[in-house]
Every structure is written in structure tokens, then in C-alpha cells.
Image 1 (cartoon, one colour):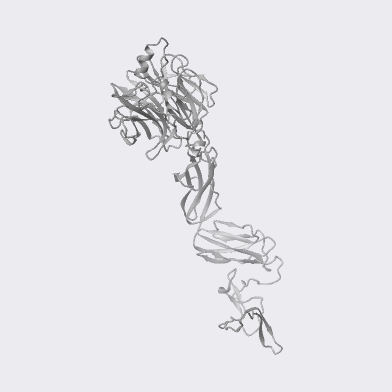
Image 2 (cartoon, rainbow, N blue to C red):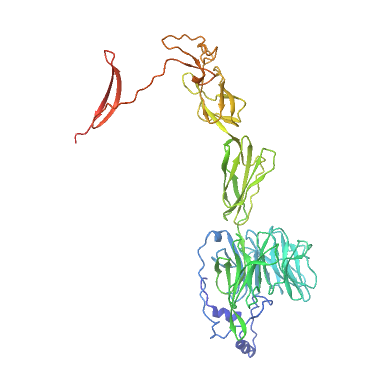
Length: 614
């Protein structure tokens, strides 16, 4: 239904003065539509203008936008007169595909959706007076929830979906009642001379409402049992509606903020008695009336009520349901005869997020701790929480709270062991529970330096699963996936004695080293039945015990020749390579150089040349 001609609707919806006179001259009575804004709407005449007046025009409804992410995981319930009677409709969250759910000559109004959008609560006079009913999202399972004296209106469902609050109005009283969501155990919370209207639940389980005493209206708040009542605002002229946001400190109301004929929507903080921002059409012929909020809290659902002037009276022309914020205005439902939109999420599943598993050891200093996961319900992840604790028995501390990005920087200090856990909330404000694992999602130990290398046999073949020993002990040792490879994690700069062992091999000589930076250190293990004596040159150093050295150059064990252990042997002399001299002068390429001795003992260098004469 993307376009509507308004004239047929207005003929049924509004009474003109001429139409009223004509009806009086006929014997058959005419059914008149109820005041769509309630009898408390100030300065409004519920009349149909003359067919030739500017108010009687054809209106083409705005085409709804294609479904987007918000449309897929939210629904809007609203009441509409587009079919000549107030009925309940349901649409996607972007206004796509409105579907009629009720079809009854009674007036069905004030719909609200439960969280998950599986049930719709609404007010209907089909039983003879206004009572509260509930039905499934497809219109099935209709049940009446309220009975007893007085008309019922303004239902609202608690965040948990377990409690219902509403108004009961009699000839002498207008009070707030609360019951279970199935209508059972109904009880009055206010019973005095004040007029109590428009109750709504706060996220922390309290009830805010509008109380009018002596013609002066304020927003009040109380506990769910009616105790601890207190006003939240000063007197607000023309105060009509209240919608609480998921933040327990923010709500929006309809009232006359600037004393012109029109109504505006204003935002209030719970701990302040005055508005901090407001939505104003800046047109005396347009009212804004707040009816709901977007499930992602980024905008409000507002009835845009448009009038034309007849004489000195404002006459209703159109009612549209719009998504509005300080920065945006989007007409969602545009037949011109829709109101009382209630916006709710279909997503009741929290995200599934965790801290990405870290290796057992992390270099000391600043490092990012990332989170990973997804939202199962479709609303999309809104924000992240990340906590840490130092050691297994300390308290969890916030590192990231309601953060927009899935990571936070942490300063690792050696040799602390740090535990991390993460969670997220989605755009429908479903919040993931913390993991029940006492160790969180992951943990790691901070280190200062690495000692890494290989453990080999005397043929330079890696030895699988070697055992690395350190005194003082390392924070830990990873053997790794490569045979013979190891990495030891060191907590601080100092001298460590390090050696490697493995069954079937002689242990390597202990190697003392000052570890003040990352260090490469390889070990060579001789077989257990090794016949070479003093193969590591450690016995009687610096003498080369059990070794026979011949030649013109002396040999001895030296500390600066050490590979592992405390000593190493240097044999022979250093060869100093002279400066290189270019000896290839070809115009092409020289390759495959080869050294060879001639018969006279002369060393020759030969190579191949390749060149292209062209």
C-alpha cells in the first residue's frame, strides 16, 4: 500500500459542520470515528473540512525504503484507520510490508510488542468497553487480559516481559494498575484524587508515569510495588506521553515546550528536572507525539500530526509515523492515518564473543588484546566489554567497558600472569553473560627476553623433544613443532645457567650466560656411549685435557670461543681475506667460478662466460 487517496478516509474519519447538519436531516445514524488523539489533546477539533477546502486533497504516501539491517531484526506495531476502522497492523522496522492483524468493527488501538515481537498487547472495546487484549504476531491466539470496573488503556510491558502496567479509569478515578503479563494478580498502585496516566517501565524495573494534580502535570517515578513515589520533572504544560529509553537515565516526553499551539518531543535526564534536547516541527500546525523508541536507541518513533486551520480551529489532516532524532527524520508509515507505533526487536539472543586465545607467553610492554565473535540474532554487535585479572585469585578489572571496537591495549609486566575475558552487547541491547570459566577466555604470562635455539646431536641432526634446564628457572619453555627447536621465556635480565638433556644422550655442559637481550643458543649432545673424552673441553680448562694438538699453531680452551658450556677450543689461526679484485672483464655474464690446483701447486680460478655478439 504505497499510495493512498485521503478523501475517502477523511469522509469516514472526520465530521464536517455541513456533514453534521446533513446527517441530522436523515433518519439513519452515522458511525463517527473516535478522536484519534484522545480527549486530552489541546486545541484540536475533530472535524472534516469542506471537500473543496485545502484540507481535502489527494495525498500519495511515501514509498518505503527497501529493507535494511534494522528492518530485518525489528518490527513496528501500530494502529491505523486506513480501512475505515481502527485496526492493529504490523510491519518491518523500516515500514516495509504493513500487515493487518485485526478485523473487527470495534476500535483496536495502543498496540505494544513484547521483546522478541512474538506477542502484541493492545486496547479494544470489542467487549463493550476498553479492555486489554493480547494476540500472537500473526493475529492468532486472541485473549482478553483485563476485566472489572473502569476502562483500561496505556498498557506497557516490563523489560523482562513478566509484568504489565496500565491505566484504569472510572468516573471518579484514573489510576495505575500492575498485573502479571497474563492479566492475573491485578492490583492498584495509585488510588487518590490525582489523575495518573501513561505509565511506562524503566530498564531497572521502576514505573514512570504522568501525574496531574490541580491541572498541573509532572513526570513521576515509583517502585513496581507503588512505593517511593517522587516527581522527576517540574510542571510541564500539555504533557501527554512518556517513553523511556534503555538507558535508565534518559526518557522522552510530549509537551508544549515553547508555548505555541503545537506540541514537541523533549529529552530528559532522570537526574535532572529540565530538558536537554527536543524535536520541534517549528510549525504551529504540526504536533510531534512520541510513541516509541528504536530498539537500537538511536531514534524515536513519533506521530507527526498535521492540521489545517478552519476559522480559528485546528482541524486534523494527516497522521504519519516517523523515525526521528536530533539529526534525522524519516517517514516510516505514510498512509496519513496511522499512529501509536511501538517498535521492538525480534532479536533476543546475545552475541557470542570471546577474547582471542593468546600464546602462553607474551612479551612485556604494550600489546593489543583482541576479541572475536558474532551476533546470533541478527541485530549486530554494538559494543564490547573486556576484563582482566592479575593471577588466578584476584578480582576482575575493566579494561574495556561498552567500547565500540573489539580490542584494547594492555601493558604487560614481567613476570605477571594475566587472565582475560570478554563479552558483547548487540544493537538490541542483549548482553552476553561472562564466561563461567574461572580462568576466563585465555591467559598469558609476560616475559622480558627469549632464549631460543636448537638441540642437535653431534651430526647436527635435531633431537626430538629435548629437555631444557635453566637456573634460575625460566618462566616456561616451549619445545615447539620443529624437532629440536626450543624457546625459553626469561623474566628479567640476569645470569642464567642453561643446559640441554635428552634420554640416550650425554647432557650438554651447563652454559652460564648473562641474558640481557634475546639470545640464540644451540646445544650439541653426544650419544650416551660416546668414546670421545672431554669433547666439550670443560675438563681442566684452559688446558685441552685428553686432546693431542700438533702443528705450528698452539691451541687451548678459551672462554670467548664458547658455543655451549663455559669453554671452547680454538684451533689454527685466523685467515685474513685481502681486498677483492675484479678479474672478470667480459662484456657478457660470468658464472660458475671454480677453484683448482694445477700440477705445480698453483691455485687457479676458472669460470664460464656468456655474451651475445649482437
